Image (cartoon, rainbow, N blue to C red; front, side, top):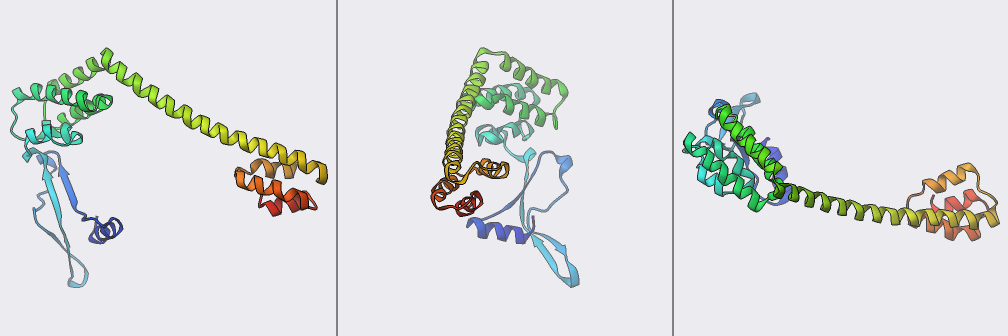
Length: 227
């Protein structure tokens, strides 16, 4: 992201904007300096980019374990903890996820296992995968998933009912328009019926209904109603 992009974002949101590069392992480190990066430009000019580089292996494991929940899966990549301490840290992660975000525990533990594979042996990663599988088989986890599905179903039903009510109003308005218009304008042609059916705005259909008494033809009524 260039300086112009940062300025545009700052202007749009009215907040400071900072470029941050997160490196997960030493092999991915291109040796970026911690200060400004200067790149030669055209005609002797120079472009300067300032960013913050976070090298996860230099971060505190405890800080990640106890910090923002979304960053906790990075803890196994941090510095300091020994291989022997990893199982206990994994237990701490699992306990925290289950306490704070039970409906996302499986997702976060899976992310932890994937990230662990960047640094640790397969045997250690398999331990995390095993915990995820056991957790998914537990009655508590199944209860959380079921509750999430119930909430999703309820929201879906509410939206469906709202949509059904709107469709019901549209259908009734179209039926009344055809019935009343046929009395003075004659039976509508297939083209007129299609235009009425395609009208999905209740306000326009009401405007069409109000235009019927003074209309000289169906086309006249449709034009007046904006359909």
